[in-house]
Length: 267
Image (cartoon, rainbow, N blue to C red; front, side, top):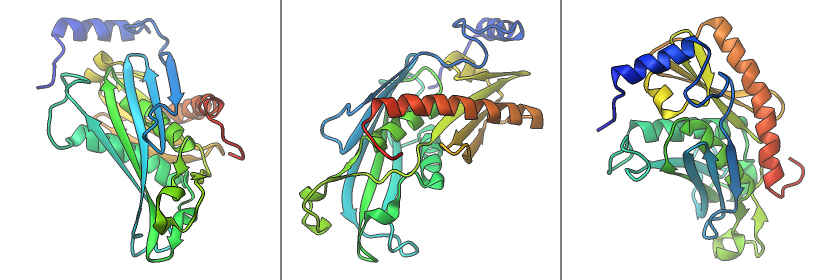
């Protein structure tokens, strides 16, 4: 069962935000401390652990040889899943993926897929018959708000850390492993609207009183590659433009931090 904030806590949070303050002392459009650790799991083809404040996420990349989709016979396949377990938060329950896990996986997947972050044409082994299948697995260890950014940054870092294990598969028809063909580095930035206030990187208490949520994903060419609106509230036109501009700035800074952590050239 999901926890519900008391009216006293809600009133306190609303009063703080009205005064231009936040529960943890940050500015309205300021991230919490973030730690990015690539190559976190040796058993994966690529991996990363991202800590965004108290939110803690691990993303692993696994690969296999499979069949392409009929409408893209010369392209590899990319699939994203998320697991939200009770250990991470009382918010989550055991069992098959719920709505929250499905939405998280879709938002992360859309940013990577729509941007062409991975050149899937280079993952074709035999057109119409054999291609590489990339599995992006998101595991939440601790949840204190803003899973979208933590998981999106983790997924991009894990892909940059990724290696195609060609030497392990006879069907791959290659004897040497090679880096995943990354074409773009994409970064999501998530804003929350609470009454008339817009904040960046919400903690859990702030998410519980949120009216609307907006995730904007940019690539390194300052192009919007994906946007996702969540919850029942709305973002006014001016609010949306402000979020887009801020997302572009933050995305550029975060992209540098990611690339500083991984050993990749020509990105």
